[in-house]
Image (cartoon, rainbow, N blue to C red; front, top):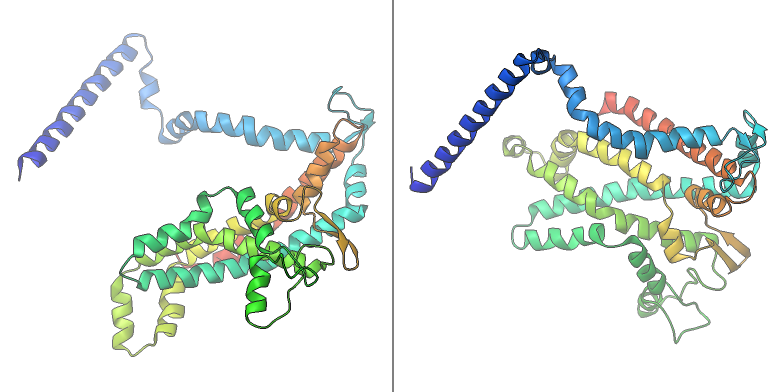
Length: 349
C-alpha cells in the first residue's frame, strides 16, 4: 500500500467519523425537544422528504402547465391578455381542432416523421454502435465525431441542411451539396425545398435531418450497452460455430433490449415534438408556397400549436392551442402505453 492510498483511507475515515459525530449531535438536539421521530421515519416517508425539491419543480413547471392547459381547453372565448372567457364547453374546442384541415395535415406530417425516422434512426444507430465497438484505434475520436450533433444547436444544423439541399435543375450554377453529388454521378438535380419542390422531396430533407440529428445519443447509449455485455457469451457462440450475424441477433440484441426499448420510447416522444427542424429547413411558416402542385404544408402538431399561441391575444384561439396540446399529449401517452405493454413481452431484463 503506497502513501497516497493510506492517506486517502485516512481522509475517508476522518470524514465518516465527523459525519457520525454530527449525526449524534443532531439526534441529541432533536431528542431534547421531543422531535426524535424525524430521524426514525420509515424509508418511504424519508424518500418523499428527499424528493420534495424535485417534486416541487415538477409541480411548477410540468404538472401545473398540463393541468392549466387542460382547464383552458374547456373555455370559450378565452383571452390570455385580459384573462377572461365567455363560458365553458366540453368537447367544442377539441372538435374544432380535429375538424380543422391544417390539424389533419399536421397529424399526417408528424406521423410520417415518427413512422419513418424513428425505426431508421434506431437501426442505423445500432449498426454504427456495433461497428464502433469493433474498432480499436481512434475509438474515442470516432465517438466524439458521432456525438457532435447532440451538442450542436438544432436550428444551426437545420440551416446547414437547408443550404446543402438548395437549388434545382433550372439553376445549375448554384447547387447545394446534395445536388452536386447527384450531378457527379450523372443524375439530374432534384428540387428539394426550392421552387417547384414536391411534398415528398421536402419531407425527405426533414427525414434525413431527423435521422442524422437523432443518431448521436442513440449511438452512445447502444455503445455503452454493447460494451457492458460479458465477452463469455460471444466466446461460447464462437465455440459453437455461430456467425457474427447470428451472434448479433441472438446475443447483442436481446442483451441490450432494455436500452433499445428506452430509445424507442424517447425517440417516439421526441419525433412527435418535431418543430425546430421544420422552421430551420423550410421557413417560419412551415409552408412552401411555390411547390410543383401549389402550396406544400409541412407543419407538425407542435407547429400547429405554436401558430395558435402566436395569436393567443385573439378570443378563443388560446383554447384551441390548449386543446391541440392535450390531443398531442394523449397521442404520446397512448403510444407510450402501447410500447410499455409490448415491452413487457419482448424486452429481456
